[in-house]
Image (cartoon, rainbow, N blue to C red; front, side, top):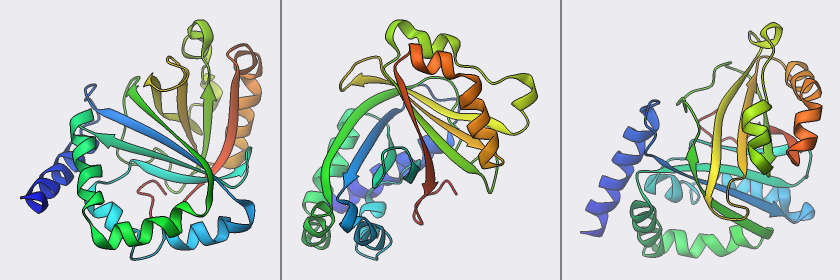
Length: 220
């Protein structure tokens, strides 16, 4: 019965990821801060066959590591049809002996982790706009909706930079904060967009990071 439910949840996750127009999907944004000395070990473990037990349960929208910003950090986005289905996935993993034996090795590489349940703001594609491309992510406290109302892509940048997705925190701290993922055709185009929006980013109490996809990430 558990395996049957796990297969059902996995199919639902894939179906909802591909439905770009859906506004009902729940997105969990997870951030992990790794020990600097153990970060290479995390990258190795993340690409292992044991980690693929996690991917059998449900698929991420994307997973990245930081290159500039807060270093030794990992950024994951996981879609779920509902909070209840998220709980079912995690319950199934708790009963997976291979995963429970592997998980402590992975957790030993972290200093801390956060989890936020979010709703998407606008369209969420299931593949990059620019492929292969480069990525930045923005975390904004979004006080007074300053980030959502004012962050923009100038017309002269639209052919090289896109907002891949935006997620607003519903459960987490602080509620109303926004995570946004930028996808760009070259790394300098993303840098210039952030520079063009410097005032908005400052007023909305935002931070930004250059991020690279992990090997297991669907977004490359």
